[in-house]
View 1: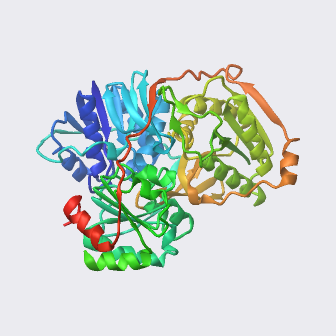
View 2: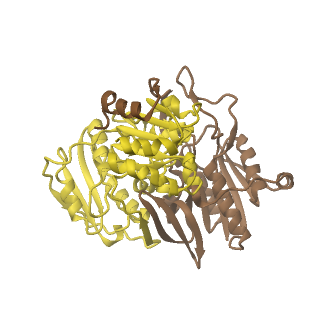
Length: 309
Length: 250
């Protein structure tokens, strides 16, 4: 088995999602190589070189890969990837964007969002918003896979000293270009990597009321999320959305505030270790998955919770 | 410019699907079927482009069983001009669907192809990107804004942490995210008119496409159940439980 893991990074920092993906690769077993594709991202390669048990770090450092345009990155991975038995990437916005292009170019299926490895060709993945778990077997010679990061505990980040090989392949297809980016700057942990997440739903009533979650998040070192209903109502931006079509999280503690618990929301958080629900409707479905439920008006409960932490 | 909108027939988003007791698949007997919500957003965007005078024709296409004609009629009622069904006996995987769509794109030569980012049954999130690779077209996935600007399309994308805007040369592929638009409802007169619009049917073999599955589903099982929780009476009790029982805060 020879496995190529595509690293998730922002040209400066290797993201934890890469470590979850290497963990999945370790479960498949075999020689693992990591590809860092980006621009001026040598520092990321140096970080990846410290992950133990890796055969080689491949560094493709070209301006064409600066913004992870899927046309260029997909074309690069297709050329390199043909020599491996498995190509893995985390199921992040980037991985979901470029990896299906790779699979189609190699004329193989993609197995999306695996949550467990059974063996080298068989995997588990959630379908129907996580209401069913499918066990699927890939019959293709190259297995192209995105990894649900919450399904695999991160592998160690240091202890290794893998050599770095420069890859001189420049794929600039010139059919797409980067215009701009608006990335929210926050001192809080990333939603998908946080140990504690507190999310608000339609019950928050408006965007301003999300500030009630800030103080609690600050005290707990938590990330702040939201349900689709809160996003649809325009309270908060979509990158805060937890759910089937948003982010999948599995923190140690998930606090759902004013969230009814639609199937689509549960799909994004029901693997959290401990779930707390605060809702004034005692019949809300969220209480069926909560370890601790508090039936209360969130406008009373949140300030009290903040003062008692 | 023609706009092609591939759509999928899926179980209605309100249905809580369970695995069959023999674990051979999801239990969809008598389940209400509907157009995939993200595909509905795609149709709406295409119809708005036509209403704005940017697109001349909107063509809805589906790859699946003959029952998908129902969802194509819905697309026609929502404003698509005509529809195409590529009929397959068993459900095609995303790669097979992308190959079928490629054949339709080569016939119809649309300037823009708008798809949903994922179908809510398989949750694969692959077809648009695969079609992009097969056609060597650029893609703007997870779109929250689409603007046609002289021979290009500028797409604002929902990415981890915020928004990214890319410019793509036409012909191009866009996949829709939630906030792109709010789909309209079909009016009764439009539902009646839709019955008279053209709906062409091709078989996958007629188009010479191989949709043989590459993935075997060995079983479909229910997810692990969570143990029942408790209702706490006060914030004090909650904080106490989190500190001393669950030990998740200090």
